[in-house]
Amino acid sequence: MRIEIQDLHFSYPGGVEALKGVSLVVNTGEKVAIVGQNGAGKTTLVKHLNGLLLPTKGTVRIGDWDTKDYPVARLSSRVGYVFQNPDEQLFNKTVYQEVAFGPRNLGYPAEKVAELVKNAMALTELTGKENVNPYDLMPTWRKMVAMASILAMDTPIVVLDEPTTGQDAASIERIAHCVQVLHQQGKTVITITHDVDFCAENFERIIVMGGGRILLDGPAIEVLAQEEILATTYVEPPQLTRLGNRLDFPHPVRNEEEFLDMYRQLHRQRDRA
Image 1 (cartoon, one colour):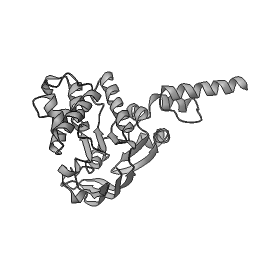
Image 2 (image 1 turned 120 degrees about the vertical axis):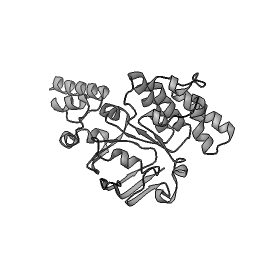
Image 3 (image 1 turned 60 degrees about the vertical axis):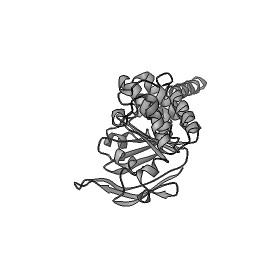
Image 4 (image 1 turned 90 degrees about the vertical axis):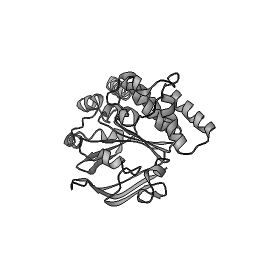
């Protein structure tokens, strides 16, 4: 489902202008990461996607819906939002009830709810924890419950707010797997994060924000090469990207596989020379 944002401005009641003319298009099935320092406008921007905030000026369209014309309850059928802090999202007594709440609230029949809950719990590796109180779980698993509760709604767009914050390596791997599966299903996945390594490894497009505006927007491998602009937002490219730049690689690299491929290619060229 296409997202179209045109000349979006937003000011908070105190007068702070958090967004200053943001325009962008996210096409169906894209994986997009939005990065930038605190106060850049990232969270303010994505909260416009499901109507939690409405534009002071400009328009936000989710498919053929203008968000000004639909309540949050309706927009939640198109945009699922996983909060940074799962404790702000969880309120049911068992994991199953929590994961089932969303699809039930959307009015799906019982058989479909059961199927969606089963699939979401399997994807987040929560199977077997159905009857556990979410607050009896460790924070990493509460994050999985929050994710499963949104995945079970089967929305065409999923927004992940700082998904890796406070997560261990195993949990980050689970989240990355969820992103890949959602992409394979044709869903649009958007994340806002400070974890540039997670972006580089899992997202194809990166948007860099600063001061309520978009500073960079393009393929991840190109955006991560813009060290000077990234530095103005206190965002550093991944370590291997920076190392490749220092070694004068002809193209930026994002991860270990790309780094080693480029190193071997250059080594072969030197041997032939």
